Length: 182
Ligand SMILES: [Fe+2]
Ligand SMILES: [Fe+2]
Image (cartoon, rainbow, N blue to C red; front, side, top):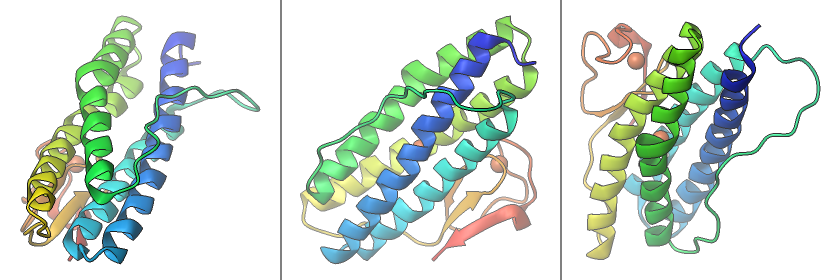
């Protein structure tokens, strides 16, 4: 069995990533409707990365049956700019607070699989925060984001512009394992 505290963290992270996935798909629709196709494409790519994280966490949860989930979630945005700010705030919470704490608990409890799942997500979220910052700079000037093809690693969620590397810098997956958003 996974130790209870690490398992609680996996369940919470699964809930948080699942909600982030859906929130970013909603934001992608809004960006598309408002004439920002590249920001829309960025949200779709990052939504996919959050799904990768949710799936990784889910696979490490051994609890069977019903349980309540508690996860931080951002609500209330009504414009593309606010959506991007929600994205920035959510990613920074995960980078600065959530995943470092979850990794520390998993390490202390010698839950190596969970620790890897948290670390993959933590590293990938750093790439997301910087993309959203770029998009916010563009939209402040009422411009769409200038961005080429976006690749997302299907193993860890690492997200990169242009050609994916031969090996993912986070999980070492081969280039062929990247899903492209173009
Ligand atoms: Fe993210
Ligand atoms: Fe990866």
